[in-house]
Length: 394
Ligand SMILES: Cc1ncc(COP(=O)(O)O)c(C=O)c1O
Image (cartoon, rainbow, N blue to C red; front, side, top):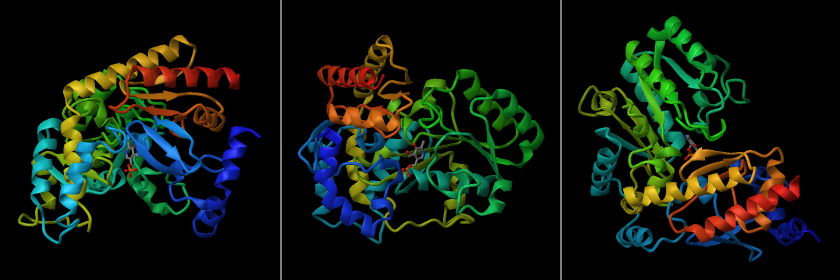
């Protein structure tokens, strides 16, 4: 019996229960790999063990969010220290002040709001931009993923109100001409331009310096805001990828690594842009969130970020650059920057299972995200697994 067939037969009892209570047997569309993914049981450092006892080195890292892998003792201790005194309160806590100070210092934007996911951070950014500018039009780029809210998924997707398309312009990725033309034509209607400077789903290719600067200068020229979605890319620099371009956005969305393994999201911005959220000001925008700024998440996240300092970021990015170079030298098409790499193979599902069999857990679209417990022995194992999988699939 093949590895996959054996695994599927071992996980059949769980799957049979799952399909009765979850559509298709799963909650997260992004984790689905046909015919059905294995079930995780535990993780430690860079490794995950599934319900069949198979161990894999984790290059998915819960879609890039586990920057220190699993069960980091310092991050766990920070969370545990909060939990013994309660997990959530109907009052603010000092944790949100401490963490906002840290993010403000790292990202270079003074004002912060917390939420529970990247999807929510993007929703809040769009709300802030529309409230601040008094305009409706959101500009975004084809193929970039910004979560699952109505404004950022394809307007012809089932469940999206037909009228929504009028307030969202979707432009071809990195096309200066169409972007400039749209801004010339409709610049005074634009509330914000939403950009991911290295969009994973669109291929994980970094934006050019020229394009990033163009978005900044055109938004400024037309009184629109620039939102940089750093939900994935925050891990690439001390305050995110935008700092490498030398630009200052009006708003930055963050999530994933800032939660230390717990659900988290945040929006940073210029003080006046986030002022509509100020309940003592005109208070035009109300936004709660029962678990927003949850102290367990924030304390774990803050410790994770403190441990992910400039030296740790540099080391992890260098490890990723070396891995990508090795892949390219071996003839594998690999894009990305630093600790994030994307494999481009026509048989996405076939590649995922091959890698899994060889002990590597990748993203279902070929994303490889490194974590700080990894070293060159791990990346050698990852490289070997990828190269041999490519050969076997050829
Ligand atoms: C760039 C970007 N923005 C937003 C999101 C949505 O984040 P979440 O899955 O936490 O809702 C993602 C998730 O992968 C993302 O990659």
